[in-house]
Figure (cartoon, rainbow, N blue to C red):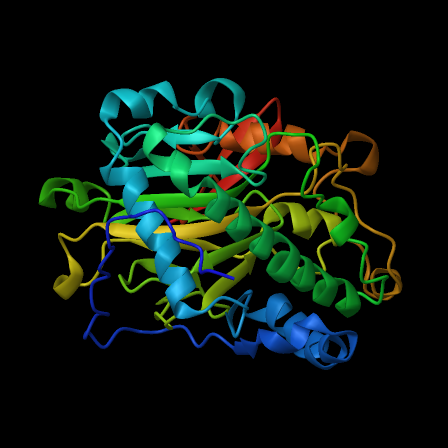
Length: 366
């Protein structure tokens, strides 16, 4: 059978990793090849469960894509941000502020970071089905089959096995969370997500204490980040210190979001992280990245699952069951708040919150 000829794309040449000796987070590294079998998941589950309850972040290696395959996806990301005109981007703009949907382009300067400074973060979000009614820029059309395959891999081979491991840790059927994450489910939840962070002026850095995205927790259930070399992501460690996430070639950085914290009754905690100005030897560079943001199906009600572990340890609820939002409702509330609505102080000087109709829907950690 002849080899498939892939459409031509500009080559993304990643910058070298920083040479600075930063305060790196000690993230556990998991050999994810074992997660593809029941026996392997039984072996991995105790460690993954412990990691996601304590550190909150983990790195996955041997996740099923070669470095060349991952590099190709970053090449396609280069198309998204350099081969599409500003006018065409606006034709595919997301309705983030109006409808709480990230599908499409989020332009730069939409969010307020601090002291009147706007973000320099541009992103393009695809519905996980890629072809599911979403229209894409013309330059991206030749790559849609590859993007679909990429989404399927992240959803079925990575996300679903992470969800199985987390379910095993709660001593429930390992398909419990998987059944809440249908690939073709009706709804606006996005799966694949590309972003580019651009440099800011010295004045803007001073006004925001060099923070690009404030400390926060993610809205969805599981976040899968493809490791990239510009150091900017920091996590809030259990000892209360911000530490840098170190680049590991062709690894995935995984964390838990608010929705899974609610579904697990507080057994797994949403993990706090932020994005800051890179170290000196990487400043002035565009930071290109790729995520797979997983959200439960829009109609899933965010109430704790029944688990013998929770019966023993107790359930922590963000909402009482009768007023708990669905995934679709929670997504819209959160997306229409981050960087768009005014935050107010809390009783802790390092925290701010956004409250809507008496409900705290977002907290910033500064």
